[in-house]
Length: 87
Image 1 (cartoon, rainbow, N blue to C red):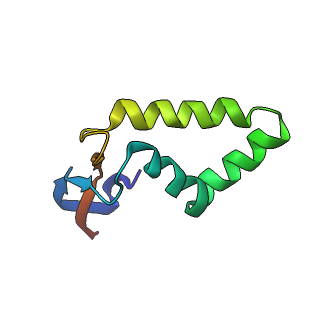
Image 2: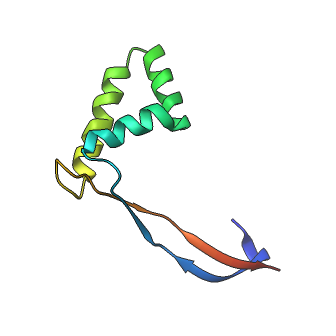
């Protein structure tokens, strides 16, 4: 994407552990209530009669990707950390 305009000095893929939610589905509710893209997706699904389908898909995702317990959820979010110098 940057072509030869950037020399990267560091490329890392750390993992952020998210432990702020007691139950896995609390993670879903957080995104439904506070995360713009999820809010917009639910609005679109609602307009097309597919809100329940989306809600269940997100619940399934939260149950499958929970690395904690039913009483203390833990999710892992990998991200790219890139540090470089512009040429």
